[in-house]
Image (cartoon, rainbow, N blue to C red; front, top):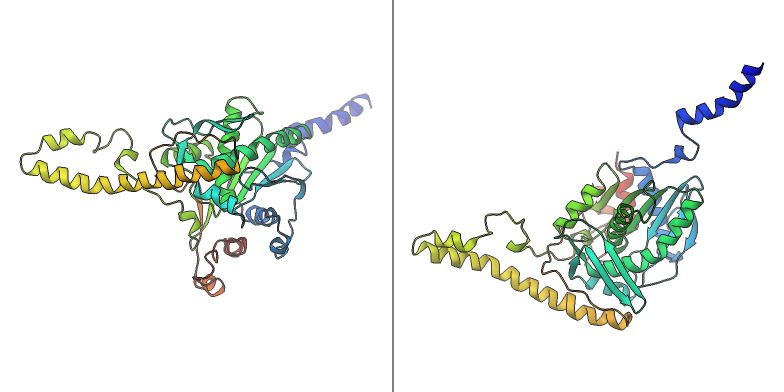
Length: 367
């Protein structure tokens, strides 16, 4: 009887060791999950904070909203959802009809993926989004990320203390672009031991524009390798094709056939050297001029409007590049004939293929 009693006491502990605790049973799993994505789209629709919009979508089944943020930064907003079993969703709002929200998109110069932003007199945002010194990101969405992160980090800390260890980050449209940068920022904090290393993040960027250059994309994809981040794109949607990308010969890796063009030209005999130099300039100069105009209007000029919205903001030095690329493991939603019957192309409605309903319709058709 004595040994039987001891064994009966130990059995629950043995079971937990073999199978994991009830909370651990709710751990996030890597890989794209269609049902998970559709649940997140129901949450994301509600993060618009517009009942007239989100009431047309089914309510989430697994998660309940536990926090709504104030509006901050460049008309940015996020909310927190929980399943009460150790898993939470950080949902970031996309572009609104407010002109300030569009300013975050238009302010499209690139800045280093590691550095500091001076946003207000008492608000400096130190960030490390990538290790590659050539990595660069969209400055407007970085400003938005800074404000959101300041509010999100304390909520993560509180949730962790309450037993939550798994967080899904989701954003649609501009929210997806910010979700990229927020994910990188959180991983950076983990590398610095600023937040617990045992927190697991999984990210779904939906209908997101391109967040940075190729070197940022490399770092992001390595950071989230193994099925921990996805870029969900409707093939008919124009937003993931933006911002406008301009690649110059200076955007290549250091070892490339154009690195020492002067020596290459010098090796050629007359008149081949003149022809080669002319062809090189004809190919290189237009993209360089376009890049300078891009910096002028979507960098310096746009920053003036940002300063009116955020008086303490000090524009950082921009990277002389606009080589925006698509980022993350892509889940392509194929727009077939049935889709176009339901969501036809439209000159009047430029977002016909961009909103949650189009994405959810195509995602539901995935195997």
